[in-house]
Length: 318
Image (cartoon, rainbow, N blue to C red; front, top):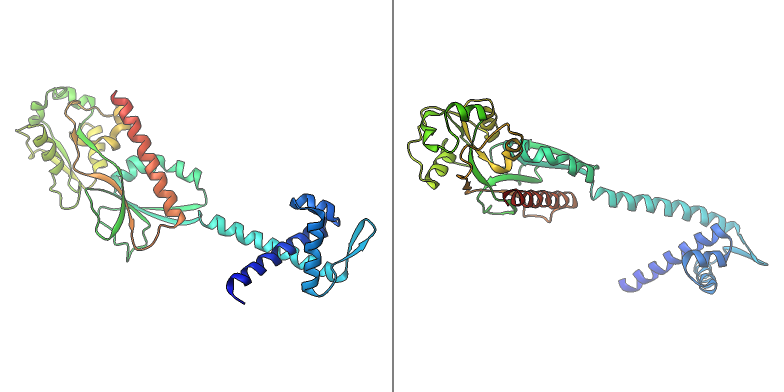
């Protein structure tokens, strides 16, 4: 018997067993027909065919009444247990697709300033997914490390990996209002020579300690910046926190400092002097296998969050 014939026969037997279970529950072909959207004759035909295949009677057909035979009672118990176990297994399969552990690796600054403030939304949407969030400045090896998705601030491409560009970035110097007033900075970038510059020395792989400041100054043709009065950190968010506390000026990535600019914790003293960043935020993952449902759900959520943030920023600039 070929496989197609076997599958057809198996599906037919399963349908007949399901009809039998319903008939055993209702003890009426008419009520069973209504429950299964069949005709009473179709129900009777299925039960008769099943009895023929099994080689024994399932019902005593009395006047306007059905009664299970001894064999029918035993089969009903077995089928009830079988279908219950099947339902449980199917529910577990469906649930497991969006449950279990998901490990995310991300740069510390985007984790603290962008990902973590939003992560409650993902957790509410997928409460059965257990998130592990790991931070670091190095690139990960997806072949040797148990990482599902990495968030990078980089230019790409990522050879041998799959990636999604989430959002672009703009940068501009930021500081506290007190610091800006003390050094008369608002609208006066030439006064930067008096100030302490705060650097993210690992802004991107192989970056010089002052790379972000150099790019910004070159873009706006600003000279005379003194790097001798400076502090360096290995995270952008630490430089920003130092700026909030009157230590100096940091290069603020707008995606990450937007909330603090809105609250007044930071100001952009040269508001018109923002620079398109050379780097973007990317979600990176293994290209060796198709993303499982957990990974795909997280990637879709990241893209939605990034798109919503982009729309909000555009509206603010109007």
